[in-house]
Image 1 (cartoon, rainbow, N blue to C red):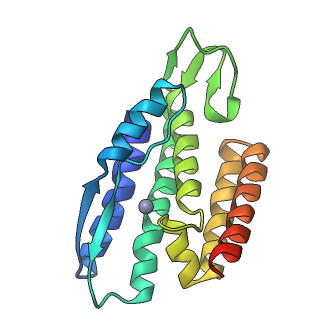
Image 2 (image 1 turned 180 degrees about the vertical axis):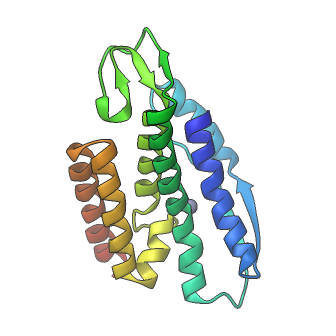
Length: 190
Ligand SMILES: [Zn+2]
């Protein structure tokens, strides 16, 4: 709740507040189907979370401002991840779950313990990387459309953070995923 919830809420608030700062009207709209889908998948043992998104209304928004509004969400997740890593050093918290049989050290899961801040840092980096996939309607598609260089730079920073927090496996899997997304969107939409 604390680690993923704050990552989701602050990400969306970032979009909303920057859009308002640029003179737009912006509001979060919940997707009922997305919420239902989220609960169904969570009962099946995994999580596909699409509870809603911020909608922005502004006819005169500049492409650069639009790209910044998209980029700030994943940027906030990166800042939260860094903050959680800091907390994991100065105020570590761990919770014991007897059903956890496997270790996922990069996600702070070791010997039945979940190290909360490490878990939160890894999940926030996952949120950031997922949202940077260059496919509509994700944030990455708008950044990619505005500037491939900025998109690539942001991905490099996120992958570097993922390497430090999670490990090389996160870098390899996300590199493959993102490269596939770029190729597929190129083939599908030019
Ligand atoms: Zn976003």
